[in-house]
Image (tube, rainbow, N blue to C red; front, side, top):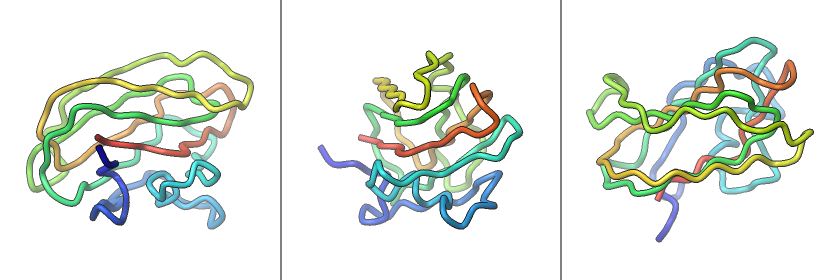
Length: 133
């Protein structure tokens, strides 16, 4: 099963509420390299919306983050990024800067995936990867 949230699969970041750091742009969250990341600014919440290549059945989402405390994931089925439906909302444990991994199973047809960093353990948090299967 291949990751649907990559540029090679036709995915793109269509919205990021912060993108001030040229070294850590929003596209790093879907570039397939866990060594790169999108970094939030010192305010929360922050959101990242990913358009998948097309509306497609989804069964699992995996995220790799650091310094994220509150994490919310939603999806939208339509041709526009609106009418988002919840998938999960969790409080992640503080791992002191080590990668936080979340995997959630769900069944839906999605066109867009929205990741919201609701709060962080530090002024800055990072999203290293969003993988959609």
